[in-house]
Image: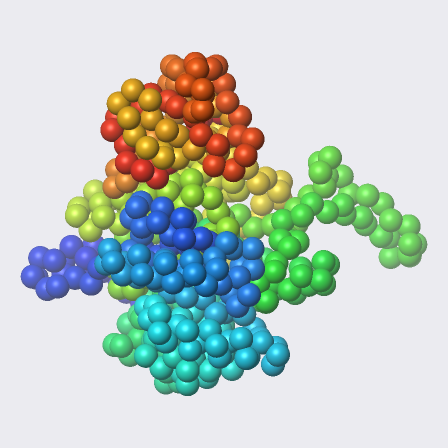
Length: 427
């Protein structure tokens, strides 16, 4: 049995030793999302071009990737680039060209899972660190050591691991090996995301970045009596069927102290296809949780961070197998994909004491209750919309609905805000 010291972080500080600061790693499906992630406290982002990562619908072109890396490095942040597809031979010409390009762009690491891709990276991007993707199913110290001895620096552990297994690896791994784990976001129904369901049902391969999210669909279920084959009896479900494959979202906000005390190097949030609002909310909650624990380990209260995460969740939350391998509370049978109480209201384009410019994301009207998400602060600033003005005519209006991308409205804000601050609307 592995023993662990409570509040190890605090004891190290008291001995005067330098404490390794944990990295908060966030998704960036576009250059704009990367800027939001950094604004709300991410130390690093991971991103990739659509053709070679596992998110073909992410809006990240080569030019955006270059801009993201340059911007991140200019403000002291990091970028990890994903090349984590399982590649057919015909893809390798493109992979080699991308590896050469990344050698020049110099990101802080490249995330890959395919052994062939990793060999290409070692040859054509030798100065860039290799991070082995969670798709590689690393669940043991032996597997981690294999990749480490084959040139990889960081291991992104499989979500299926529990904390005892993770502690064992942290206590016995080589000193130069870094460990990254997921702490929040969607969980794939398949083992570490290596799923064939989407390809089978819609000819869209998850292992090539084109997952159709078949596990989130609703299904009708039927029972067949063994002695009467072909006679199918419907099993009662809701009017939408049942989502028998859909998992709840991972949430380890309560376990942050344990994870930090283990010495894990990087805490990863899932969601390259999520909105800027989702990123600001989730990153902000974890940024404050990490900082608060590091400042005052004895009084860590996860409930106040969970309160903020509840405002943006679109499915139920689970600790998955982190605490208990026998945990059964992991499935989202109802298939819910939205938050009943809050939604993305808008984003600050330009602040003015009287009439600030807001890019709207959902319908807004006079009387709506709103919350401004302030970077580096947990509690949002609440206010009610008293007046709205049309952006073009400057005439006072009662409501506005988004009709085109980037549509704007004028609104009075209760505090001074900076560009790109996110505003939440209470439904």
